[in-house]
Amino acid sequence: MARVGRLAGALVVETGGAYHLVGHLRQPCDFAAAGFARPDGLDERAPRGLALEVTGTPRLVAPWLVVDVEGEPLVRLLVDRLLVERTGLVSERLWRLIVHEATGDVIDARWLGAVPDHVWAVVRDAVLRCA
Image (cartoon, rainbow, N blue to C red; front, side, top):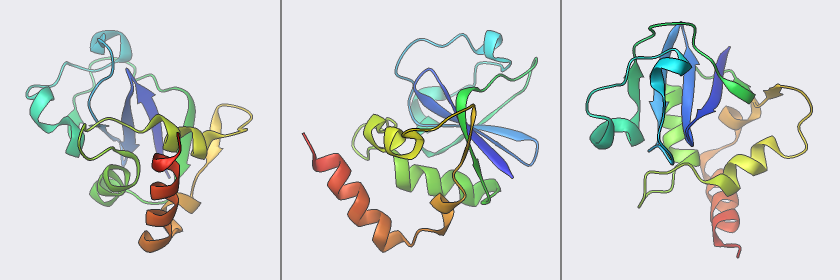
């Protein structure tokens, strides 16, 4: 099982013992305090997934998602499902849709990888269109 949490507005993906950053940061980030080295090329590559080097004890801020999809397919899934294309930022509306009414630190989001792309496209369009 992989985990997905947040770091300075972006997503941190833990899969197969490796960590990835998905999406641009929304605020300054103390990577060292989060257990990672500051990645090179952060501005150019983060929206599509950027490998993070662990330098300490990685911390995922609760809540975090637990998903069945692993590795690079998970990174691509999160890019396609949760990032705003023109900005490279994580959509707060879509994130809140997933974590809505969650109790506890762990959210079972295995369904996220099972929802067909065409169904998620309808959900995504409706959520992002709302004012």
